[in-house]
Length: 196
Image (cartoon, rainbow, N blue to C red; front, top):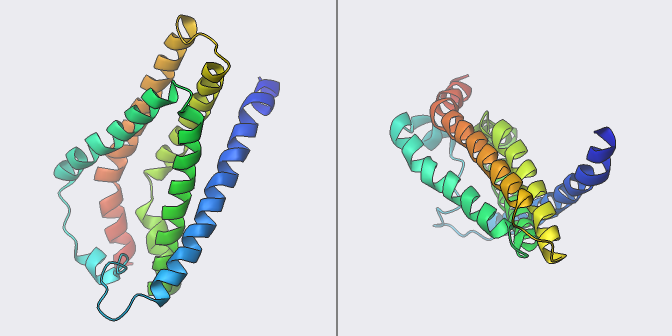
């Protein structure tokens, strides 16, 4: 098992990290440039106003049903495309995009509020991203494996298709738990962080 993980799985994770890190660096540079040239009346970059976040009112149930189709539909669409030769290019694009947006938001939070803004940014990701990140890494790994087999013109039908579908259902279930955490645990946690 250890040899399988080291030979088959670890190279993907290392590749994923490098892609995300590259996007993150680009996003951070973009945030610095955009923030320096924002002008006097630009409100779009005020993404991490501590006052606005502290006064926000959350309806957990409505927030859950707002997140549910967006998170699950995105994962489901990724899974469908992942069963084709476009799966690996899509994973590369997704990781670069995630890294870019994460770097942008992190940079803006840091520029606006310093160290406190950085902690606010990190708090906004907890605890749901402790679920989302492993689910995304696992799903990306499965997609790259399947997409690679399709590109080598291996048959998608039969046992491979069943295994892929089971992985998809598993990761959708994991993401559902992440949505529950994001809707019901993250808002009170974030309010507690802002008050402390």
